[in-house]
Length: 258
Image (cartoon, rainbow, N blue to C red; front, side, top):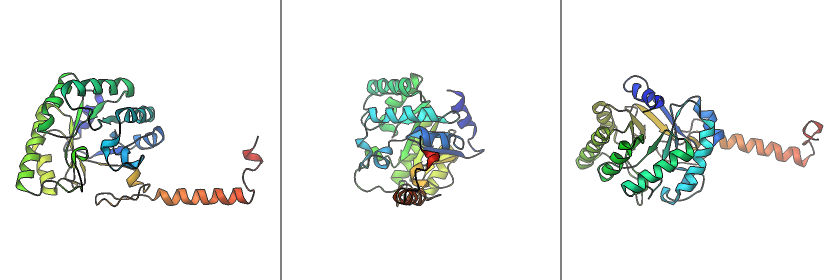
């Protein structure tokens, strides 16, 4: 494991881990100063491409965005979200993960699931690929409406078993997406690797959000999304001012001309 992953591990039960997504150098450069982990998420499917499912994003598309993100990161751990159908079996997973790491220089990859992909995660870690786990809502496998996880006894037992399994396999942390509050707390207290929550309460060791959501660039109505800014208003004001200056010949002045 590299030094950045060790720093993440050392934060367990000590200080909260700050994680955000990025799909470009410009955003990565800004958030890198504040984050511990930057995820090149397959959420770019909906955020940037307006697809109705993360399943539609391709490995090639993700890699190109990750190359851009890499240029903006100097401090944070960079994690690549392996897209749908890129880790269907051990050999495919390893081949694609190696390609991703070689081309993007990321530090780790993220895979969705527990027991069902046990052998795949095991194979990656055996081959020295750092893996971030993901349990709870797993968007790549959900069809129809998303709903929170861990409210039934069956789900509670399954998610807890999967969390323990991922820890045993050697993942360095686990994303818990929309996991019921008490269960998220129980998992966090009963495994030795950090949990990173998204809609899974303050009890997790860290939190992650889609950057475009938190700055108000999207119109997300998802319950766990808090808008810390409204960049849409800022952009609107700037464009409105530009329009005015162009229309009334206030731009470009000599200062902005050759």
